[in-house]
Length: 200
Image (tube, rainbow, N blue to C red; front, side, top):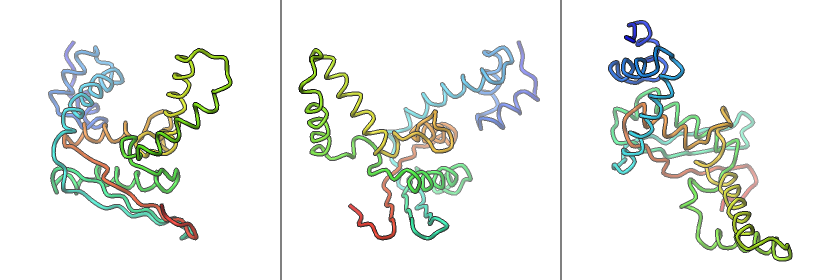
């Protein structure tokens, strides 16, 4: 089934993908726009994963101060080119990340940024909690892994549920932006200030 120009244009507006990619996705999806979006998203995310190894030294520092003046956030997000740093999509991502940090107060960017001694201490606490249970060791281990996953979701920016769409994670928003802009994007660091609190 051949896609109409109107359908291609509509899909392109929704996804930011190229005309030929939209045409192929629509043909593959039998003209179903929603299915075509999923196809492009899957392909885009595959492409995004390949871009993650590339050097990202351009970008922006986003700033946000809450209306009451009691919470302030700075986030550094890097991309490969100054051209992408100036796009609306990139600026939107940076803005969303500052709001996420302000609202959810993560402590680290990703699980790999959590110091090993903190991970070890958390695991020990969870193991201690299960010490007297009669569960088999492999079940205890699965419970500890689940609790660690929850710990990362609460404390690591990229693992947190995205405040606007809690069914997806912040890292999904990042990957979607990488797929759309076709450049590697890295959340380098952030700082969150709350009036009267010491920063770690």
